[in-house]
Amino acid sequence: MTSSVISAQARDGAMARIVLGGNMLGTRLSTGESFALLDAFVESGGRTVDTAAVYSDWEPGAEPGASERTIGSWLRSRGMDALGVATKGGHPAAETPMTPRLDAAALRADVEQSLTRLGLEQLTSWFAHRDDPRRPVDDIVADIEQLREEGLIRSWGLCNWATHRLCRAVELRDAGHAPGFAATQAAMALVAPRPGALAADLQAADSDMLALHRRAALPLFAYSAQAKGYFDKVGRVAADDPTMVQYDTPANRAAAAVVSGIATTHSVTPTQAALAGLLAVDPLIRPIVGCSSTTRLRSVVAAAELTLTPDEQSTLRRIAATTASKE
Image (cartoon, rainbow, N blue to C red; front, side, top):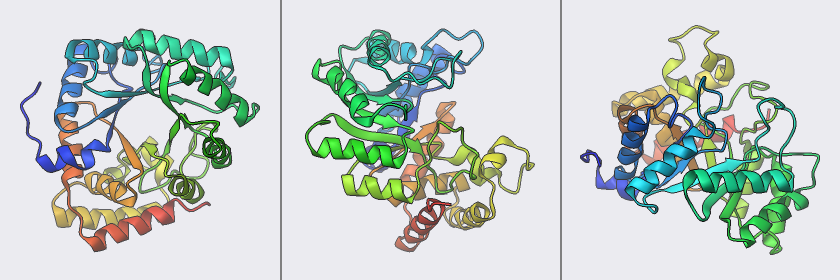
């Protein structure tokens, strides 16, 4: 593995909560680059990589399931317990993007496919990648629990599900009918996407969702945790930049100004300060970060190591609470 430049604080602290986004592994990153990134992430104290059955099938010429295959190869070369893997299935097919795939047969096919690609006998953490609002929550949960009871998955979660649907899953868990339900995934950063900016089948965490997670003591894997670089881009790129289109609002600009001030105080970038702030919001939040190189990973580690003052933490929690409020 790579030589360590990481402090003990990162190893034992926030880096254990940060999840490495795996959607570039084996495609935009070569096998060698992917292995180097995974090595560096583990050495920094990282414990979980997030992937999916469809990562990154959209890349031209990509082998289907390239991310899972690459992680599987890395696990075999480094030791199968070297890193926890959270993967996802049940995503609509590329040719029928609006047709849900959460029937029992599709769920089983995707789980078995992920096991083969990753070279595992059991998936430690598996998420339903999308919801199918036409199916009762009870039925979907029963189908996933069947896979757990067979030993194919150890625990499972729900990704991009609306809060009221998550509430029903929590009720089933608390009643003993969904003992494997252990986490969810949703978009979350210190700033919220503009209303309507996300695709219809994606979900951003709002105040109701956060309240549910706290009541249920349910970890939330937060994708787009760095708001696609919004904090570094605001005021520096054109209004039609994709990140600005998704995030730029008066409230978010005000939040970015506060984050920028905190970043200046600590001699870090605004994105680093924002990630540190997200970690301070709630210990249940597991930020998913995308890194295209070990250099980018070092930036994430620096954010994990950043020590905010109590006042700064309170300020950033208030920003998160405001931006997570329902429009």
